[in-house]
Each structure stands twice: as C-alpha cells, then as structure tokens.
Amino acid sequence: MAHSFREPTAFARMLASGLRAYGARDGVSWKRFTRLAKLARAAHLKNGLTSVQLDADTRFIFPLGDHYWHGVFLGRVYEPVVDWLFRRIKDVPYAMIDCGANMGYWSLRVSGHEFGAHKTVAIEAAESNFDLLSNNAHANGDRFTAIRRAISDRTGDTLKLYGKMHFGRSLNPDWHKGASVHVEEVETITIDDVADKFLPANGQPIVIKLDVEGVEVAAMKGGSRTIEAGALLVYEDHEKELDHPASAHLLAAGDMEIWHLGRDMKLSKIRNLEQIAQAKLSAHDFFAYKRGSRWAEVFSEGAY
Image (cartoon, rainbow, N blue to C red; front, side, top):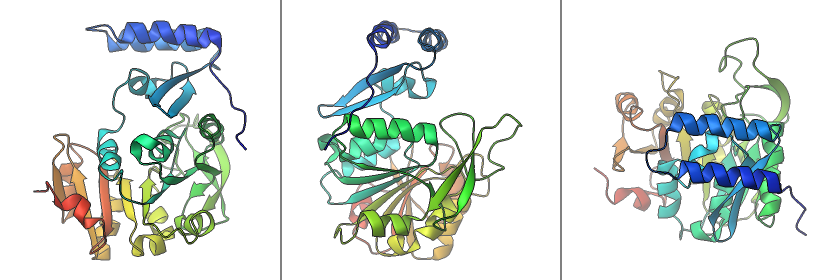
C-alpha cells in the first residue's frame, strides 16, 4: 500500500515557477540565480519543497532553493558520468544498492522505466536526508526500499555522522573541520548484509553505487562477498584524498578492473595510481568489477 507524502505548497510552486523562468533565460547570472533561490527559500521559512518531473513516471521532491540541486531544478544532467553508465546498462538485468542515497535521485531514476525499472535498495545515514528520501519513495509508489543506516565494514555499530550540509556527511571525524559541524548518531550496516536481507535469492547481478564520503574502503570491505560474486562498483575517489585510498584498495586486490569516463566522455582503463591521479583532474567517479565478470562487455566497447 502506498504511503502519503509531502507535496510542495501552492506558495512554493509559485516561487519555483518564477525562479525557473528566470533560470531559463539566456545569459542568466548564476550568482544572481543563487541569490534569488536563497530568497525564495527564506520566503518559505526554509521549509518549502519543490519538485521536478524527471521522467514520465518519476518525480523528485527536494527543498526549495537548495543550491546543490540547482542544475536538476533547471533540467540539466546530474552527474553525467553516472548518468552515462545507467543509460548504458538500462536493459541489463541487475539490482542496485544505492549507498549514500541522499534524497533518492539515483534510486528514483534507476527504479523508473526510463532507466529500466530495476529493483533498488537506498541506504542513507542522515536523518533529515532520510526523511526526504522516504518522501520521494512514497511519492513514486514506494517502488524502492529506503533504509536509514550508515554503510561500513560492520553491522550493528552505533557511530557518529559528521557534516553540516545535507551532502558530504561522513563517518570520518576528520572529513569536516570546525566546531560548528553537525553530529548525529546512526547504526551501521554492511553491503553484504543489505544484499542478504533485501535482495535474497535475487538471481541478478548487483550494482553498488558508493558515495560515502571518505569511508569507501570500509564499505568495500563490508561488501567483499558481494563484490567477489560479480557486483559492479560505482564509486567516488574524492579530490581531497591525495593518496586515492579507494582505488588503491581495489588495485591491491589484483583481480579488479577499474575504468574511468572523462569529461570528454571517453573510457580509459586504470592500471595504476598515477592514472587515478590524472583521471581525477577530469572526474572523480570510477567503475570497478572483478576481472572476468559479465560487466566487462559494458566497458570494452569504445575504450582506449
């Protein structure tokens, strides 16, 4: 049974309409647009919601005037590298575990018909984000499963989550600096336990989208069985991590293939950390899978 959900108010829809009209103008000033978005949010006491129709069967609801989602609000492609992958594998049978799902953008897209209507489990640690993630699940017919946990290498620990903004929150206490950083507690779960509990006997390969802000290695260790079984890993090697720990961990395994899609939308195969450092100058998202898995054919075409 579908649950009720929160809709943008009439006032918020009016504000969003004016903001979107301004943003669609030729030569619009991004700085001025951002200022107007902040005013729109303030006018609604920071509690207003807005929405965009991403696909025929997919609506994304998020805070009015949230600068993180300005591109989505104006109809631009969000995370082009990830978008490329999910469009490329649309017709491949798989299930997704969306780790660090935020408000549910990719869980919505992947579970929608435009991207193949794949079974999806969304994991989000932050309570405020999880409320909006759940709202998006309900607004779209509860077609994906939302779970409030933090992905780690152990299940059942209670850890602190750090971060002031809704994006970039991390279990790593050194990820954010400053006394004003928001802290909340959250229970952990491993990728392997998510797969066992929510995708048992699924019979399909798994895609793991991993955006967990500096604890990627712990997440990979907690998903080692799922990765070993042939999962495709979509992960971020963060700009601030100059030693590239996520990629170094995968390269050290010795049996993983890593690919990168640059800003020029050309694929390249990664063989060492020097290539990782160079690739990160263009884009921070990478793809990895166990050598010999069925995912190889997805990346072999068009590579150089």
